[in-house]
Image: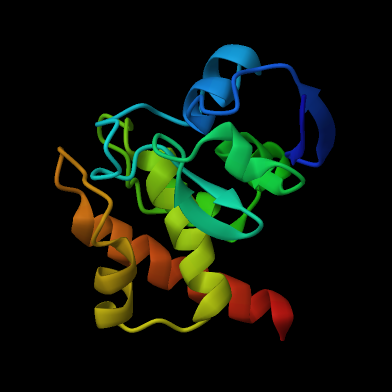
Length: 155
């Protein structure tokens, strides 16, 4: 049995500890917002938070989550209310939308670590997340918008 907390809910899972966390989330827990992209940690579609850090769930075994907190796109905020998610909608970032949950999860960590990121900070933090539709400029604009929104909320 593996014990972990997923989106605030404490769980005990009877699954192979070597199973990638991505498949545990999608197949065992039916949290399908986390996407399978490449299976080799190259595209970022499977990004989740493990104890607050962005990780690629396609190469993270379930055993690595033992006793830890996992946050998926479904648990990022209730009702799509995070500043990042609101900015994504306002800037019309998604085109096909496939990569967006991973993009949003990385952007949330970036903004927690650097509340007012420069373009270079954004490019660096988001460089491992691929968007086949090429919405990188909108992603950058949405991150800047979210940063302003967060700063306004704290003022």
